[in-house]
Length: 374
View 1 (tube, helix red, strand yellow):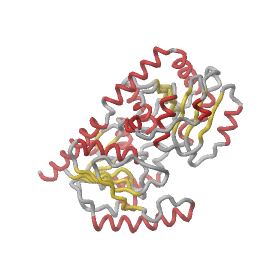
View 2 (tube, rainbow, N blue to C red):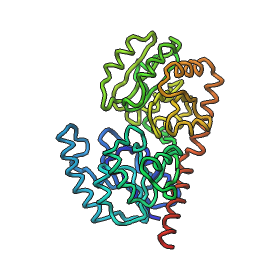
View 3 (cartoon, rainbow, N blue to C red):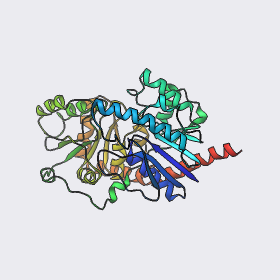
């Protein structure tokens, strides 16, 4: 079976490449159609082919002028992609930059599958973007939700028929546990001896870092909070100001962290905190699973489905007092922390393993192809 996986803006290289590698291990001939990732190295192609057909001139361009040039190049790239078409039995779209426009320019080949990363957060489903997303979904033979929560959102927000929705979970990013060039922690962080609570990933308003900082007023003072990631669409100054008034130590590493540096942060963490106000899923959650970490996370989106496997402790979203209590309890109770770690490891190697996900994905493809040939 020939499969094309399409992420034109290269928004989720770890997911794309993990899925492609797992599909290839399962016997599919896989091509990843994407663009150059502007922020650093990406996982090497493992058994599949990569075609960087998009944004060959403007990948990485920043600012308003860069966005205008990128939009112009995108139109030409989509027209070319439609004309030449992917050489595949199934085309599986992960991201398309302009859903409303792209829905009119997709190559006619099929079956078509869409995994709508990020579109199912409540924040992301504003009315204007929703219309373009609906048009895109209408062009698909099947839509993959990463959780049962996501499936419900597809029904409620996009009006997708039940028969076209297939729940196939996100996978644990276990490739990060096997890097050949893993980098050590910076010296100042490596010198820390007490407990560490890690909040990792792009810093955005919906991720609730203000709630986590408020919670840290009541967390044992020997614990440190590490906030690691690049801010996007917000200033860090209010968070820094709040952190400066806390009794404990808060450290900010406010930059993009490439793959080779990620393992050291997760290996050192005693707890990974996800205090999100909104989510469907999170790559940070599936990185924490891969490293077998104790996770404290908000009761939002698809997070409870992961916690149901014993792979995390849930707290009410926005409740700083409950978050503080959960973090404090896990730090103070080694047995509870070990149970959460074991649950994370079991989830990562079981239902959230990429081989399990590839098997479900290929079953979906075969069903669609059978419908076409039948």
